[in-house]
Length: 106
Image (cartoon, rainbow, N blue to C red; front, top):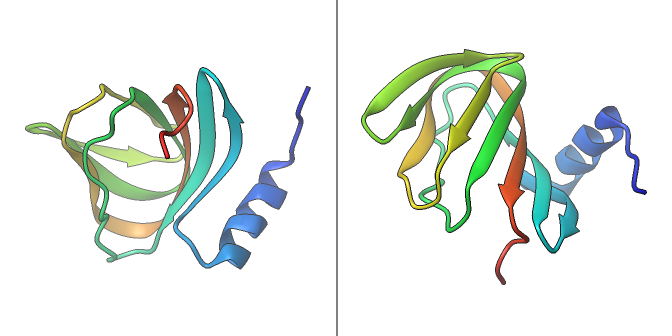
């Protein structure tokens, strides 16, 4: 079993200076925390794995394919593998838990 405190994960991500911190990697699942500042562009593109975002804090919209939906704390978004997506119109710093189906390819 692996148990971690969310506050510790967010602190580790901030200390890393990176937008994304993967904290769990298993053969069929990887999980990380992702951070974007208000007004900052989201540089991500399509991934090779299905993913689920759980918004911890902040406000933005997410563009998935041709659809745009607002998101805020408590929001959950599923994105299928290969689909173009990104957060847009980030009005409050955004912290997101990201769940990927399958471990990240290196």
